[in-house]
Length: 174
Ligand code: CU
Image 1 (cartoon, rainbow, N blue to C red):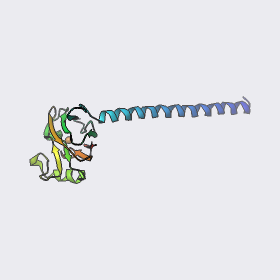
Image 2 (image 1 turned 45 degrees about the vertical axis):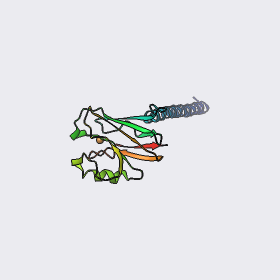
Image 3 (image 1 turned 180 degrees about the horizontal axis):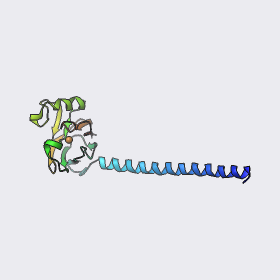
Image 4 (image 1 turned 90 degrees about the vertical axis):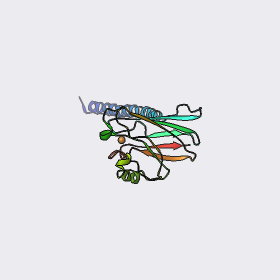
């Protein structure tokens, strides 16, 4: 091959690389948007939107996670929220609850305080929360209902020791 041919080959190689990168980028972009779309959908739980109540379901399991970190509900409508523990571990090892905090309550401060209330299933004896489920072990569920009139963002958290960093979410009232 003479120099011109080598240059041509290199040029084609470069074009090939650039095209590959463009294709890869557009694919991963597509994947991201799909994932985002999927996540957004799975995070938003608006069953029975047109009826009197908003029904919300959150699952938790032995991997110490909620399956939804964003919930949405309309202001002034009764919210019926169920927490399921779909794992197998018992309550004293992998207990989960869902404590919905009042607006502007610091979730980290609240969760640290909760550690002092083991005898009350890690629910502080204060008025910083709107509602909470029972502490659940694997296979258990609990349903609570409440109404929030003021639009805004309300944090929820699992107060079992060591869980609050991983198990947090926000209920958006609109
Ligand atoms: Cu937990």
